[in-house]
Length: 199
Image (cartoon, rainbow, N blue to C red; front, side, top):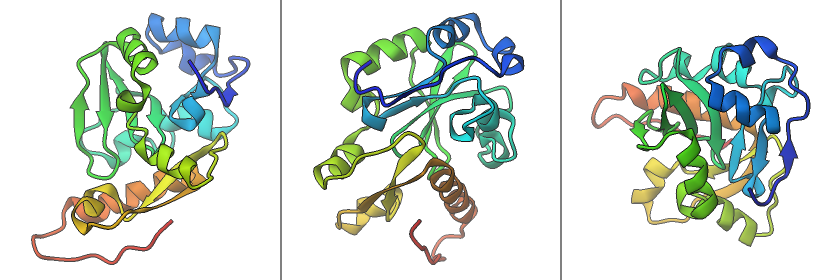
């Protein structure tokens, strides 16, 4: 992997590690998670701290994705995320992509090994890195533990004709904002509007 900003150090959360499939354990033994492609991909590790890097916090913590997103099950493993906070999940051997704005879940039709191959070969497309590229072109640099905030959200900006604003925010703040946004639009009746504020 290129553009590595962070690696997870020592495996300290052995209880979570023991629950993972063998192929993910093998990856995490080599490096206990990583932030690569200058923030384009974050693969979580088995650690208690920092919380933003903790697989257990994302999987079983109070803000775990299955608690917010109806399509996600408690057994789905949220092993990673892209630069804006969309989640890569393992369901069995399949890698799924959770759109954290809309809650839509897409089967990427690859296993973990082939997901990594695809990312290595075509990182821009496989990781949807356009927002990160735009942020970098404005002089921005993501730090470990940060994601790119996109406002207005993609599902709205597509129809607005305006370029969204891009900035770095703490990963926890970005994910909390996305979860709140998703809850607001999930059951929104046709024709009803909501007031949005940026992160």
